Image 1 (cartoon, rainbow, N blue to C red):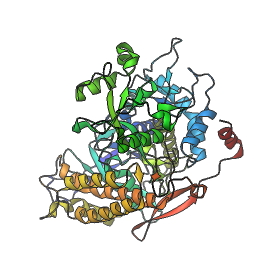
Image 2 (image 1 turned 120 degrees about the horizontal axis):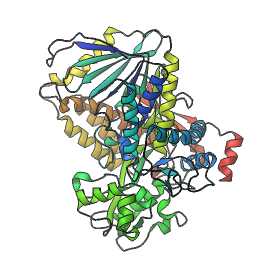
Image 3 (image 1 turned 180 degrees about the vertical axis):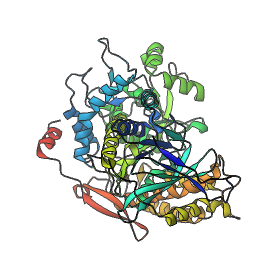
Image 4 (image 1 turned 90 degrees about the vertical axis):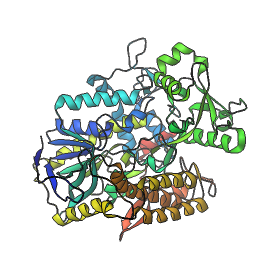
Amino acid sequence: MWSSKSATAKVGVGDRTYEEKACDVLIVGAGGAGLRAAIEAFDKGAKTLIVCKSLMGKAHTVMAEGGIAAALGNVDPKDSWQVHFSDTIVEGQYLSNWRMAEIFAKEAIERVYELEEYGALFDRTKEGKISQRAFGAHTYRRLCHIGDRTGLELIRTLQDQVIKRGVPFMDEVALTRLMKDRKTGRVSAALGIDIRTGKLLLFRFKAVILATGGCGKIYQVTSNSHESTGDGIAMAFAAGAELMDMEMIQFHPTGMIYPAGVRGMLVTEAVRGEGGILTNAGGERFMSKYDPKRMELSARDVVARAIYTEITEGRGTKSGAVYLDITHRGPEYIKKKLPSMYDQFLEFAGVDITKQKMEVAPTVHYQMGGVRVDPETCETTVKGMYAAGEVACGLHGANRLGGNSLSDILVFGRRAGEAAAAAVSGMELPAFETSDVEAEISRVLAPFSVTDGTNPFFIKDEIAENMWKHVGIVRNEKDMTAGLREIERLRGEAARAKAVGGRAFNESWLSCLQVADMLLGSEAVIRSALERKESRGAHTRSDFPQKQDSWLVNIITVQREGKITHETRPVPKIPPELLALVEKE
């Protein structure tokens, strides 16, 4: 389905040759959004190629364990897309793009049934319907689930469909830069590294869909795996795309606290959805102070701040955590509904959650901000560049509802694939400049020429420590300004990052390139957070503790003369008929 021509010989450290590959639609990332986009683009007749920097089937999608949010109404018949739309807008603190939320709430239902047709094995009600569980801040029980392994089942199912269709893919390939046709401004090519061999690759395409996930690894304590370094955001930004809502980082309320090697590992919201209770070290069920109506099933930002407050005010455990208790549900129920959590705590912490309480604390889990896209097509502000999933933004506003991420990647992954395939039909491959490729090859190989340089792994650690310390759950201008100074210092260190050894499977080389992406993501988050002088959703400022109507705006991150700057734009007004739905609920 794609063509390839080789210009490579033996690859040494200084070898600048590359192999060229061509397709209609290039999908970057093989999580749920990328796989669903690939299925749609392929089915619409586009020559499609998937590339991902990890192994096929390994994606952050698997960390969405509790369920897929869709208003099927199987358990609560009163549920509807209208209520789901309202919940998404309200819990997004009115920063969400209303059209994205409308499309999402309507189409999530069809996408779940489609996934079932593909072969996903959902848990069932007694009547044989797809079972649905409660989740924080959802009005009704609408999380369609497969135990607490929903994301894994979604990836398995979509991967099977990709393989069934024969969609070509290349895993362990890291892209570094997107290039444009200078006459049209359309993206046309991308340089990449074959991680297995160290060879350079040049991908030519008519359209590209970014499905690279977020930048969670810029934080020290995170549920994200090592791939989440924000490379998609950096590539899009460098190509001229606008970013939006970058200050909105979601701290999941419950991550593991020990042992140190798994600190931050996700403890799914499904535990609370199945009746888990939060208590502090004194045994107090403290959510009654913060949200007495919804208790443990309050919005994620509310629960995360509540846990943070309990710990910082001295009511946490000796480990710096609070307790999450599900023991009252009984061993049989727990092992059936939460098999992954049972195994996870038993294996890593030596805790039997059928008999013992879990110790949990907030962990960085998701970014609501990202690349700004058109709600209908998922095209970015750059011609030919599309984005879907966590790398994109607009749907979740200031706070994402649990379970909305999986339906998001299905709905907008499909839309991105459809739009990209339609746009490139009958199109010739756009041009690219050889000089742009040569300049990028020089940048990519530069770390091998550094003689007295810095270990990139140390820089990664310093970035993550800095963000956790200065741009956490509760922020203020003094801390964030200090954090920004540290990012500026680390940028100097990153310029001297040194790669050692050969090019095959060289993590030091890849890390030298990734630190630049992480620094960009960090700076965009900090500058956006400094700009928003209020508290809203996941963005809490101790120096501006109130939410202000004057800040009902999206903060846009743009590049001007090579520097990061910001613009504020009013959130698009919700049409009266949809606003009435929100006010009704």
